[in-house]
Image 1 (cartoon, rainbow, N blue to C red):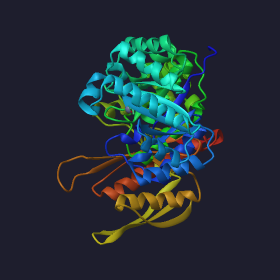
Image 2: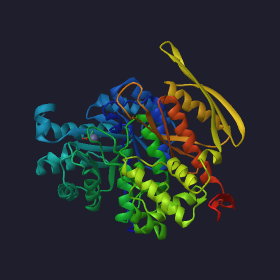
Image 3: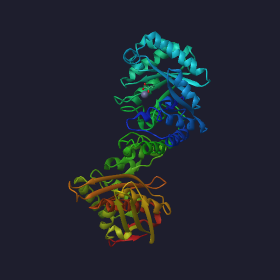
Image 4: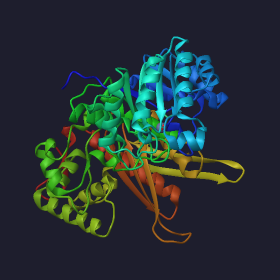
Length: 516
Ligand code: KIV
Ligand code: ZN
């Protein structure tokens, strides 16, 4: 670990919100700002105050929330923008003006000299309010190097606290990022930031190259959301800083996943499953060779322990799976088959995988219970679907009534939703809110044939508050029934996973299952 602490400026609420189609209301922005503050970011770029009344309202609320982080507002190098930010109560202003000839000529119609003067004037004006001022030379990485140095000097002399290097169109390479950091450092000892876009997938690499070359701070967004291909992803950047480069940050790494989920839920921007750190598959393992190694020692196939970022490891049954992995999965569900049965279970799982099926936890549970001689898994179920009624139509709110038998007790709930499936899911969640913490984490639907009586194949992932997860499947012609069955199936495995060791079900000498 070095003694350098790299600062984090989070711009999820500004550049992140510029993701096409994303628009957050003031309440949502405040909720994210509070989460970012808990996460430990140094600066929250709360928005672009001049852009709308709603934006001003949100930034005002965030400024008033008593957060530990600096709350900054974006402003063009115009007094009217700076006034607007100040009126929202921010304690930081991020002033920007382009420095590249392409932007000066085609967008701003300014000469280089005019750009220098306008930038320095704006910094001086903003500093007059006693706030922190960061200046961004937009499109810095396409700016003539000698002129760029004049810009750094001019805004430093005008009193800026930090100079930001935006790679506005994401064309920098790590080598270029280093050159621009060194050039800024050669004319000023002001704090330097990196602001990288991900057009070539290099945003994190460029930000890291920048901080290694001496930059003090990086602009990042949760889940890497932002204009076009997005910005430097906060979670990837900070984990690489800490684990690979030995830099400190002020981030509480354990909150990374929950913060990512919050932003995902409120912005609606999907996260690719293979995304580093926060993608669903980041700590999921299927291959037999990997799971075997992992079970001996997780460091064989994991770069770091998932709990470091608030996550848990999970194993997936499928055609690449092996005996060790399947056996561990079954133990986690409270089942301990004999060797012969385990071999049969693995063969059956591989057969299913070879047919192209995703083998969910509930599929594995069913297969294991059948092979272990327990008949159908239904006998062992803790949750059973007793009834389902749905009312829907054009002029009425879709409403669902669900009846579940949970450990022998009958529960019933009626809920409305955006559609019939949503209403049924809400009713199930309502039932569980009183007994067990079970949330729906992921929902996927596939139609198995192309016509209107196609079989709906629903797979879900459910989780409890301790981070335990289980996947379940439901297949029916009726999409609502398939969805409910999938959740019930996943929940059964989740509850089975929670049973303590005393109730581990071993296979008896006769091949039947017995509790031990
Ligand atoms: O990408 C960019 O150049 C920006 C500036 C406003 C800093 O977002
Ligand atoms: Zn940007």
